[in-house]
Each structure stands twice: as C-alpha cells, then as structure tokens.
Length: 169
Ligand code: GNR
Ligand code: NI
Image (cartoon, rainbow, N blue to C red; front, side):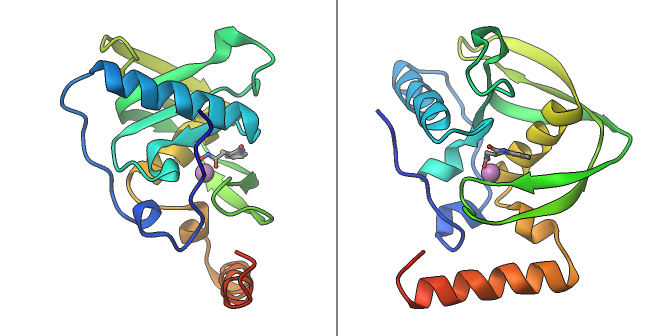
C-alpha cells in the first residue's frame, strides 16, 4: 500500500526515531509499503519517519527501480565511516518543489540489519553515500533544510510558511 508522505512541518519528521527491538512480520508490511511508496513517488530513498512511523528504518534504491538488485533496506542503521566531501543538489520527498546544494561525504559506510534481521554493512559512494546520509538524518529528525544556512534556508522556510498559510502545503 502506498502511504502518504509527511511534509516539512509535520512533527514525526522533526523528531528522532526509536530503535527497532525486534524484526516482526508487521515490520515487513511497513517495509513493503515504504518500498512501494518510494518507487511510486518516485524517489531514491525513504525513511519510516516520512510515512509517520518513528522507527529507525529506511529503504533506498539509487537506480529508482531500474534494477532490483540495488534495493537496500536498513533497520537500526548506524554510520560507521564517512570520508571526503561532495557538494551537490539535493531534494526530499518531504520538501517537494525545493532543492539546495548540501555538503555530504563522498563515501559512507553504514551498518545495520537487513529485512530478515541479519547484520549487513554497505559502503556507498557518491549518490548512494549522499542518500545514506540523507536517510540517516531523517531518522534523527533532521531534513536537508536543517543543514542549510543563510539566504537559501530563509527563503525555503519562508516559502513553505507562505504555502501552508494558503493551504497549499
Ligand atoms: O528522491 C530523493 N532524491 C535525492 C536526491 C539527492 C539527495 C537525496 C535524495 S533522497 C530523495 C528521497 C527522500 O526524500 N528520501 O528521504
Ligand atoms: Ni528525504
């Protein structure tokens, strides 16, 4: 089932998510819904907080569904290594219509559980490293807008406020 994606301003997005203590069958329903929601959007990643579930789970597929082999599910992910710096445009399904240049590491190693509850360690470079960092941020209640400073941030926040005042957000 495709679930509605929360937008900037909705509280679950702005709060840290809790660790998952057991990988149960109903978690698979959530994960399958997240995968379907991510592909339908379409997006290259989706965190559970974006569908209003405050648990430490994200899915990612930098091929956006072109290759099934690229689908990644992480439960209780942790960043174990990050290196380098890249400066690229970034967007978010919870901040539709906006993007900004965000500094991220070029390489990120993430450790956590896969959907079967088995430990996995995955190294991401370039876009996958960016996606990992973006999703880990979501699980800590942080959006890319929170990483911005200065005019770009002020402008995005002001435009969102204006849109929500007129019921268009
Ligand atoms: O679809 C998405 N594209 C994207 C592009 C650059 C950096 C990060 C992303 S993640 C985003 C989907 C999303 O909002 N995931 O939380
Ligand atoms: Ni996002």
